[in-house]
Image (cartoon, rainbow, N blue to C red; front, side, top):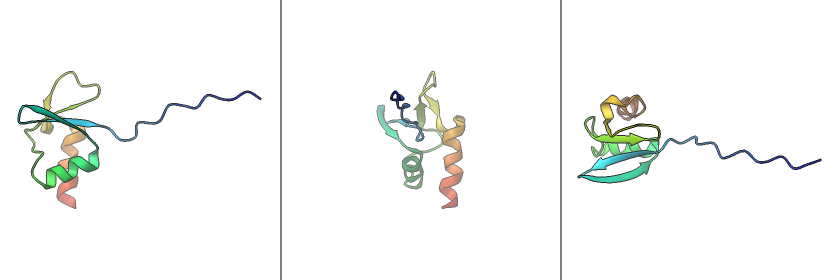
Length: 75
């Protein structure tokens, strides 16, 4: 009976960074991003970056972030 190695923690919450006033903010979870949208701090033209992305991209062009605008309007 050997000990089985524990798997790495699952990254269930994706972390997103924002470019605000030429400085980097974050990381934020999706829940936090929805709050930022509701407070008009995250806009479709705001530059965002997520793990795996090669460059900063407007939120509107990032599907994972773009969908949050719809979620924010539903609340």
